[in-house]
Length: 346
Image (cartoon, rainbow, N blue to C red):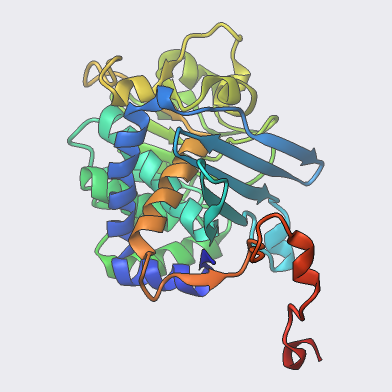
């Protein structure tokens, strides 16, 4: 049997753990895994693009475990009552090839994305950062706010979305959790006085959500929305003014904000900052940009943490996914007995 964490179990685990606590736990594990970056077998995600979206496979492995995530991104889905992003993933034993865990990853990806943002901000933002502009108030926004609060103690959110209903949703979800929420009148207004600017929009377009003259010295920009070719959120001049940090450079050159720049424009590897090999923020006046597109190592970390956290608990179901004949060489024998009880088959 393979452990199964479906949507109801995932929801219950996050609710009972506490979303902010779960994000903090994954953040801590990410620090460890990013510090051993060179132990992983890595590759850019495998993407199938269409005019209205993308489907991606994100595989990675170390010496003991293999993981992958299947994820889509379809910005027009909400107009049809569907999620923009859905995902599921698997975590397996390298030594046998047997899967250990199958999990929903729409919720888990929101946790790991927030945890990655939190880890980056801990190294790149000013330690006294307390105000975050949240541009794009969709599915990721609440998790991002909780991640930044767990990492830095963010207290005020300056929110903006072109859809007032999204702002209503965010305020309704987060105001009871103790955030001071300011409804901005524009994206520029939201950026005013912000220590951290987080961009998390959905449109698959070469957009400019944040202009350079809105970004003051000392700001950390957490750019998580630009995650595929032809999709950006930042004025390229911000990138030219900033120290830029990326997850996996070959992937980010294709999908991230830096697709706007010359291929030789210098960037810094976030893992080297986490491992202490490269400095992060060097002064209070630095503008830092985390050009985040999401990388498979983050999913590996989240799945590994989940597998350990739920094993043997009510949050882990079972899935009969691996054929196991009495004689491992006689797979055909499984056809000789009814595999499905007739009460289920009828």
